Image 1 (cartoon, rainbow, N blue to C red):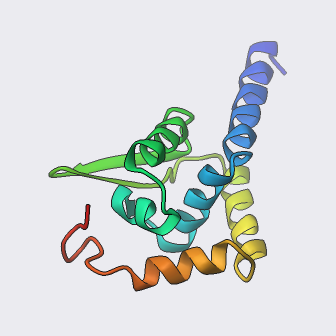
Image 2 (image 1 turned 180 degrees about the horizontal axis):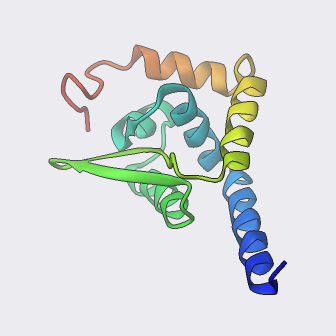
Length: 125
């Protein structure tokens, strides 16, 4: 295999696992894996973190190619990049399957599900 291709593959793999190593990013990813596209306001509400902190983590994930974003008016929506390598998508799904009944994922799902004025109706923040 060409050394440049191997180096690129290793860099992508390393970057992907570094993104998963942070608990805030992992929680965001698990929520998106379960829910699909989420607005920044949904993540700030669910994780009880500031908008700048959530946005910084989401920017890291987007720059690494793990997430894609779209703007709707003043709101930013994020979802897992459907063009991720198959192995990376499999890891996200396997991780979700493993944490689905554990904390903090259970609490995160409850908080998100109970959020008033979720996007689609009217964004909250």
